[in-house]
Amino acid sequence: MAIIISEQIFDPWKLISKHQQQSQLASQFGATASFIGSMRDFNDDHEVSQMVLEHYPEMTQRYLEKLEADAKRQWPIIDCLIAHRVGHINPADAIVVIACWSAHRRAALDACNWLIEELKFKAPFWKKETRNDSDVWVEHNTSG
Amino acid sequence: MAIIISEQIFDPWKLISKHQQQSQLASQFGATASFIGSMRDFNDDHEVSQMVLEHYPEMTQRYLEKLEADAKRQWPIIDCLIAHRVGHINPADAIVVIACWSAHRRAALDACNWLIEELKFKAPFWKKETRNDSDVWVEHNTSG
Amino acid sequence: MSIQVKFFASLREQIGLADSIIEQASTADEVWAIATDNAERPDNMLVAINLEYAKLNSSVSDGDEVAFFPPVTGG
Amino acid sequence: MSIQVKFFASLREQIGLADSIIEQASTADEVWAIATDNAERPDNMLVAINLEYAKLNSSVSDGDEVAFFPPVTGG
Image (cartoon, rainbow over all chains, first blue to last red; front, side, top):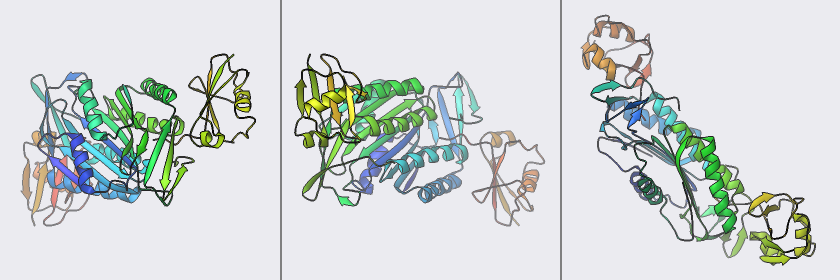
């Protein structure tokens, strides 16, 4: 179980791969489900050239830990990784990474799905997009 | 859209990462959902030391292409990758990789979920496990 | 008339045959009967004609490829 | 009594204040009124007390940290 909050750009696939290697749980899990949210260069019909992600550091860490613990109570997951960028973000950068490992597929898939929904609607992060020359706070997430 | 059927071991994360780089769609997609099925060293309370995956080559290729086309009809996915191992497989090896890319999360998550269920119950692959010294055909997949 | 017949996995081992060619049949069920010398049909057996899932009573034509196999277990 | 107050994102910019300390309040709503000099409360504003989601009428105690922020948009 790990939480990573990073101001630096990361390669989501390397992050998951590295976590999996370090956990040394290979051959115990039969299923890995992951979700990666990344920055598009347009949103709601606006071009977006960059983005700043603000957060509430102490609460973020605590909230993501709570999400992992809640997921582990609801599904038999063996391991879980949540990573989130903060600070300055450019188009194509990964913003969020969620990965869940379990013996059988249903637990990993359902936990991953639940975690991204919970994170998007409750974890204290806020996006400010640069559209043309103006900076605009994103008012709400897309419903899906 | 790609189908990979491989007798060679592959690193699932590198496979997805490489496909994503080659597709040059970064900054168009905001969501990537993936599922990886890998070989455990036990199944139904038996230790499993290795496995052989047989398939029906011409039908497999065609069936997986049909799955990708069906997924693309049902959800607005931008890209999709399905990779599957055949032949001799060892514990901890990745067996199946599914990755879906879309603008928003729901399409990628739902398509990925649908694809793994369809693949498991309809694509013509068969597992034969080596349990202790005997080779046993797996009779059915787990329901989840 | 020529029909290519294939068997896979546990069914291939039970029948003791991977491939066969038969000369005459009107349905997949008849293909089975002729190719296997009337072996018992497993309850959960699956059938494909020309790489598409079909039924035992589906009709077959000259040049078709008919495959019989057990429930799939990939992924 | 001392209560640490924080504002985030668009709310921080509207209020023009990131942090504040107030000396007396019994509910989060009162913390808001005192810290913002009775600024209007946005309809969809969220409140956290000591890093946990709370309500505007939740009571606050000495040493608490009370945060106000708009709907979250991470992920």
